[in-house]
Image 1 (cartoon, rainbow, N blue to C red):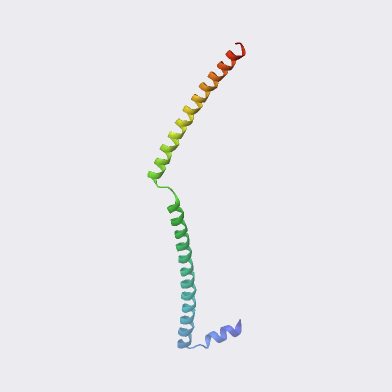
Image 2: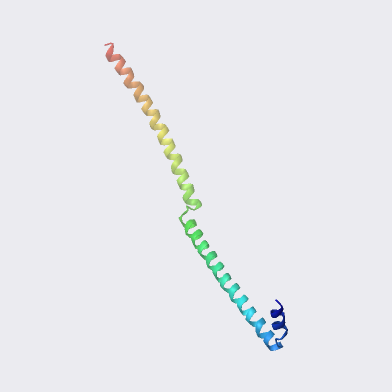
Length: 100
């Protein structure tokens, strides 16, 4: 450590300025590269989110699907009711045929 302190004390103002300039260049280069990398990650994430949102139905499509589901539910209920009535009628006819 003593040698380092001695070496440091021997530097001229010009050498100190060059040392500081190199340190600044390294720091700026590091943070510049890191910032570019971080920005590329943000852009990649934004593109992914944009693609996923494009696949999602918008409100109008959702409302149409909701109306279609309601129509299908109504149709199933009506069909089930008709099927129950038909089953009752067939059962009644079978019963009458057994006793006829």
